[in-house]
Length: 400
Ligand code: HEM
Image: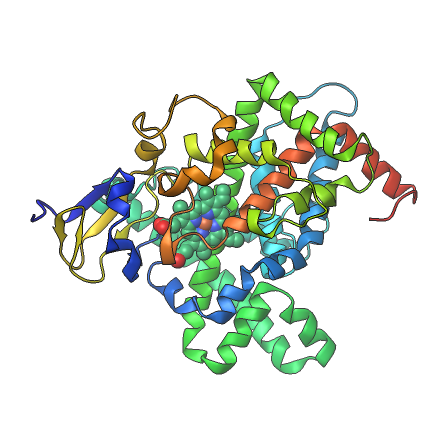
């Protein structure tokens, strides 16, 4: 059956089950696009591997601790209102930037204030514009959105270029120890890729940009949404607290790192760590009802193909209507209800649940995103325990 136009909306899993997704469509993501494809070599896959993510667990724990301290300070004298959106964004940027370049860009201990300020200003502007930056607006370019985004991306380029040049110079000049330290960051790993494939320099820059924006905005939007769902449904929050309490049998020793480890991928869960099923289900349900990328990113067919009986010519753009799929009453019981319990039968969710996309261009940061979100939510619903752990550590009573 021929298609009527060159933009296809897929709003049913059957549309996604054809061979369309299996032969390497091209994501037309705003910053990554085809370029990320080139980076999907063993080196870039390594930076998203479970081992690599585990290596950075200390960074995540430190950042959650700093976030918690900020919240304690704000409310130390009396109850205070806190805008979590900005706190989550700054937290997410710090986590991801420490993994990428080993530096914080917000809050205390910021190295190089001038560079940090430039970075913060660009991010602020970018995020304000990102809210308008829906794929459809981009196709028809309402209000010159594309031009605005290109301008901002252009402003980011020198910043990233300087970061990369600095690291590249250090790699070539410094001692073995410094070099090894550099290699521990993502940028170090990606730069080692350039030694064998120097033509990938511009892909590395663009890959880092898209990773950063996606990682920070998507995780923080989900955390914000989950907190708002929680605050309006006390019984769900209590259930999460109870599961964490039961798992720790009331002890508050080093539990943050244990919580963090509990959010690793289901298949890799360590035997000695009881599952934290309900908090995980809360995150998954938040991603069902409020996917941060409700239309995924634009995809384009790299060859002629047939989806669900329709002939799709090469170059057709595909928008996946994830929002509609995740709320389709034919696919889900009580489709619009916040019901983390539906994930108790996890295996049956299949292709109808794809907040991270699917296939070769699916989100490579899904495992990392889950861990970060799990840790933050776990900490926020158990602030007393976090405080006890931080105090005990500062008094030298525990080491973890
Ligand atoms: C709640 C957390 C997150 C959600 C819901 C999410 C969702 C997505 C989605 C839907 C896509 C497009 C997939 C497709 O169209 O098939 C994507 C792509 C991507 N995500 Fe995420 N993401 C999250 C966190 C992260 C994190 C933490 C990172 C990295 C540290 C990351 C890095 C990327 C990259 C690099 C791409 C582009 C992949 C490509 O073009 O091949 N994401 N993400």
